Length: 156
Image (cartoon, rainbow, N blue to C red; front, side, top):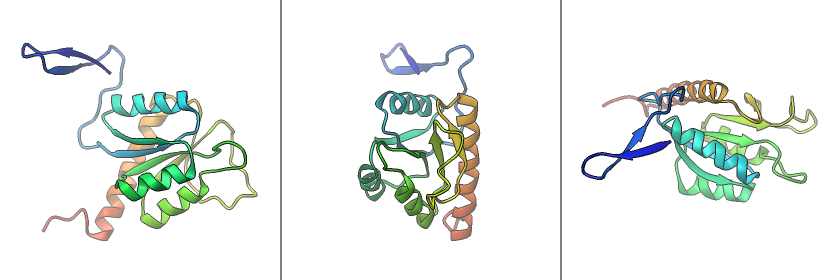
């Protein structure tokens, strides 16, 4: 996102022509697990442009789990393959147990059937903005539904 300054010198976001407009009420803390630094940086930038708060860019399962322990996240984008034989499956299992919606990211058309990976939507890399927006909106709906079932979304 580009910034200008108001007459007091405060930063003011400037919308670019054709750029997606952040939607009010959807701001989420999004855990990003991506082992390729350039893709992680681009996804973080897209999340900010869409009005969300990226939570780290973990490149390993250990980094992702450390972030989850420190920060409450609303949803997650998980690169399925994290280099070598490592996958984000342990993170996905933890997120399911915590009731946090997530999507896999992959450069492949499908996940390895031999791995017992939790089921979740998959976004093809490189992720286009419209697919990212749709995935975030879907995860927001799942998150809100889960909060209502647990009583977190109810006002006293």
